[in-house]
Every structure is written in structure tokens, then in C-alpha cells.
Amino acid sequence: MEKNSLMNQISVEKPRPSSIRNWFSQFGDFISFSGRFFKDCLRPPYNHGEFFRQCIETGYRSLPLVSLTGFIIGLVLTLQSRPSLATFGAESLLPGMVATSIIREIGPVITALICAGKIGSAMGAELGSMRVTEQIDAMEVSSINPYKYLVVTRVWAACLTVPALVVFTDAIGLCGSYVAMNVHSHVEARRFFSTALSVLDFRDIFPALIKSVVFGFFIGVIGCYRGYNAKSGTESVGRAANSAVVSASLAVFIVDLIAVQITDLF
Image (cartoon, rainbow, N blue to C red):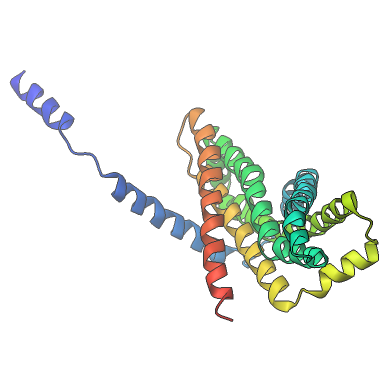
């Protein structure tokens, strides 16, 4: 009895690993999980059907949300900026300012955050439920590579659809800006868009597209990582979805900060 009580006391007093150690362990697992994508992404066989299905789920079904968001962004940005520019008699610079702001920064970041909430949570919840119901284990037993079928296709789809959604959001945002310009004065559409696009150059468009691809990669790989490594139990599905949104949103801000610093060097 004394020996059992002593063993129980030792097991109770056993120190738990620190949160910092757990964070580094999870970060290492994430790096390994991400590196596996680059190893398997170009290796046959290719799951074209699942890839196109994920493109529809992540891209086409997100169009209404990003369209509404982009239109409101252009509308509000123009309405808020017009009084300040009108004070200095620089209202003619408004189309160029709005176009530069939306295409270089606001459009990619806002679209990526929306995709992190919609796409990242969907991937985390779907793969998390598959892990809980042992569907992923069944695929492994059936000699099917679940990582290549579930993760690679989703990450590729996110890398492709997020830049496309960013371009679409930028276009809708400029349309919203044009509507806002005509609230107080009449501006021809041809004049507005020619003025807005004339101030843009290669350094405004290309870096925005490149970082949009990086946004899509991190959104896809973080959502898949959280769902793929979900623990047993129904509560872990919700936790996987929630952590996917939070981690992907944080990654978007970090990548954007790094991209801005790199862009300023050129």
C-alpha cells in the first residue's frame, strides 16, 4: 500500500512539459508537415479530380463574399479619403490613390483574411472530422496516401485560387470606388479607370500577386495541418477549425510584414 501511494505521488508530481517546449515541438511538426508538401506536390500520381473540386470549393464558392467585401472596401475608402483631398484641391488624385492602396495592400490582405476564415476553417474542420472518424486511418490501411490526396490538392487549390480572388477583389474594389466618386460628382467611367490604372506599374502589381500566392500556401497548409493532426473526440474538430483561422490570420500579417520590408528594398 505504501509503495502504491508513493508511486501515485510520484506520477502526480511528475513535471509537465512547458508551453514553450510544446510550441517549439508543434512548430517543428509544422515545418516537417510543410516540407512534405514540397516533396509530394510534383510526384505522380496526380489527383486532378480532387484538385478541381477543391478549386471550386475554395475559389468559386468564395466569390460572393469577396465581391461584397471588395465593393465595400472601395466605397468606404473613397468616401473617407475624398474630404481630405478636397481640402487641398487634390480630388483628382483620388482614383490613383485608391487604386494603389487597394492593389498593393488592402486587397491582398483583406482577401487573405477572409480566405483564412472561410477556407482555413473549412479545411481544418473537414480533415479534423475525417481524423476523428478514422477515415484517414482507413485510407492508410487501403494503401492510399492520405497526405497526397487530402493535403496536397487543398494546398495547391489555395495557392491558385487566393491570387485569383485577390485580382477579383481589386477589380470590384475599383468599381466600388467609382460608385463612391459619383455620389458627390459625375465622373466618366473611362476617365476614372484610366486615371486609376495610369499610376500603377510593375512594382505595384507583381509583388502583390507573389505574396497572394504565399498567403494561399500558408492558409492551405495551416488549415490542413490543424485538421490532419486533430486529436480524438468531437471537441477537437472545433478546436482544429478555430486554431486554423487564428494561426492562418497571424501568418497573413507576418508574411505581409516581411513582404513589405522586401519590397521597400527595391
